[in-house]
Image (cartoon, rainbow, N blue to C red):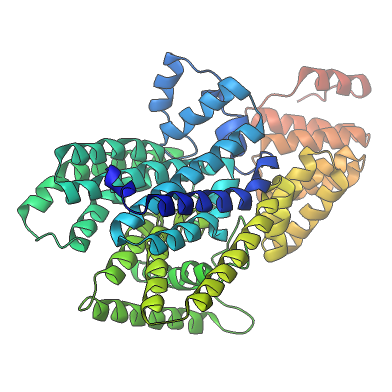
Length: 531
């Protein structure tokens, strides 16, 4: 293993230190960020599972789902931090950044083992470290799962590469045992057995029964954890906000191709717009939906053809491309469309960045000026680093995060409603009403916005307007006991005691209960009507 450091040790160490320093500086703004109201409450601030670090709680973590997912190692890491630091956001952000730096080191090491080239390693690892598509994973406390996945997944890959190079059983076993914490961090690690077969192809291992037999333990684990992930999602029984429409297999495949080309591929090259939310929209003001979808299919077929033709001369392009596609595969669902998110690309982009490193080596061998190549690389690294630095501030808190998403996608009602919720919790009811009103202008049937605008009106003393909102909410959901109670209180404030008693009767008919103190206050002004 230490042969890695035996050649050009000074250059390797200095390159690795440069990589870590540049990446650390790029992500420094994250350390001052706070918790955001996007899953941080579910995983950390309001998660009872992490509030106690004891053998009993650890056992509970290992057998619990969280938000429809099974990643107990991620929850355990939160529990350890909470035990020592409480809800100190800086501690959680520091851990995220430390894990990312470790992953950068492992990527640097793996690319060196694959390419045998220090320049290829430093280019690929730098791109992995500072690309703006890393911001969501590093700056968002709730995406610890992808950082831990990256740590153990790349560790397992590195161990397997050493197994291929040295034929020592200990490295095979190490790869297998690192696969377990990778799965416990995030079940998308199930793709590892396929990547191991891809490594066999890359290193020219002869296809045969032995290769498949080696992978049986890995595939068995992958199947087990795949079943656990499926059970966790079913137990959750709540689809993501974009999974509301079912599609045929052909439709889902076409939309998946569109997303692969116009979301992932294009954002790798031009990562200008960073957001916590990316809607599944196809058409634009310039190009219609059909044109974009057709174009994405043509582009992907052309890329597939080039990759196939390249296999006659080199296995590098096939390896890097398939690494990206295979590791991204779990986020492409069949028959429904999952969300698009930068965090899903954390491990997959290793394949693309490896190809980028090899591309720079190819240019060097084509006798391109070293000064020109160095200037080009420096410009790219500077652009990406500055872009990433600026995007870290988007994650400063929940309000800045959602405001950026609204600026990018002003016509999405769910975003307006979410920011309205933030204002409501901050008791900024005037701005809450503004966002809820814009939500309802975009989507009049948005129940939550209707209810919370009524509550916001009530908090400001506008009880008549609140009662109107609650009445309209009950037209959408006539069995909502809470809304009846809200309207009863608004009517009580307006002096309309008879109507307030009607709402109380509606609550009781639905099997709900009314706070006794409210009943007593109402009875002081008007006795309960006889049934």
